[in-house]
Image (cartoon, rainbow, N blue to C red):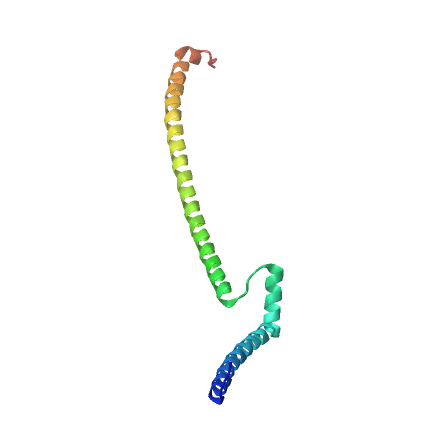
Length: 130
């Protein structure tokens, strides 16, 4: 309760401060709402709500950076995978050819032995002499 003029003046000053603070809050909110409903913001928010992609500057840049890093990491891993794959194929081919040469060289020796036995002198006598 206010009992004298001094208390009345104090209460008026307090209410003016409260009123000034509330006006500042209302002005800030109004400015924020006006910025959010600018044509550019409306378009960006519409696009974001339709596609699900947040186009907030900070979020967009972070996501773009993350996508770029992921893309380059995948390319680097793919290149390493391809080079490793080609080395493994090269090693397998080398081993295959070495085994093939080893087994085919053993076969060739047996074939040469068979051919040397086939050429006997009686086979030459069957050719008629003129």
